[in-house]
Length: 467
Image (tube, one colour):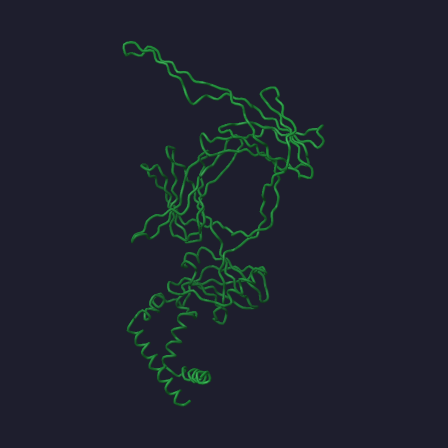
């Protein structure tokens, strides 16, 4: 039986090329899979930055390509000098970095004593075989405080050197979520550290008050308010010494700043919000940031994009954060961007909640996102072009793409630059839009199916008789 089926298959392969149906199907498949110049509006030349032999090359996709391509980049093709399609792989650019972490150094408190002028002195010794310390952290249960701390170091306990003078540790949670309990130390080899903490006892007003009213004939004669003030001792639970160490390398997604096409600012007085609409070129963004001359602010913000929901488009939140810029008595801390999962939208909205504060002065906008690169096999003395900008082209499936991915992990790709954008003279917008509409005609598909069944039946019968 297997031999008979094998002979039938051989006859089918001989007969099929001469059948009109096979020609029709073959041309259809070519339209779906092969490069058609009329489909692509633009192209860029690809030029290796250094002369090379056959090697894996990589080029970064730019804003013009992002603007002209759909999600997942289905309409991109690389063509060589002979107009032959070249397999490629598009992936996020990955950078390998070394992580810096803070590891605790084991230590013991040797002594604590009170000093004049409302100070205390704490002496700490590193344990044997512990590395030198790069900084320390005061662990305290207190909120809403501000203290000055000076740090001295010694190798033998007799000769002391001042490392840090009057470093500020604080907690301003009464006003906003801002605090700092860490003190950085200069590079040193000290085994002993002495801390002088100032203003260890302060006066704190009670949140409650006593009220006395003296009345006569329902008229107020005397009004007395009394506030309670008590002494508060600054308690330190422990002091952690730590050292910055390099951990093993880890892979991180490469980020890049992308240009903002334009932005508009409006104020919603009822909701007390500043709304910034940001237009982009559909780059793969992961954060939006603001530029402002204002300082000492702390405000919640979120980013929105338009999504189709329940038959209409609505603004949907994709990320939120707290925008803050603190510049106070030498302490500076800045967080002025909102992160979110990668998105390729035309327009974003950044909404800032002002509450009862004056709106921030927005002088500019910044956009950051992932970098994408296209890998391909560059052969010696070959000219490559990258075509893009099609509304109908489907994504190709290359077997060689997986090979490129594994080869790229062990071989550093050679950088390739892209030229300025050029118009494709063979582009035909009408053909690009209508080239595949015939496949949506159900009667044509029925006719093709009927012809296919009849042709295959005839081939099977004639081949079976000959066998």
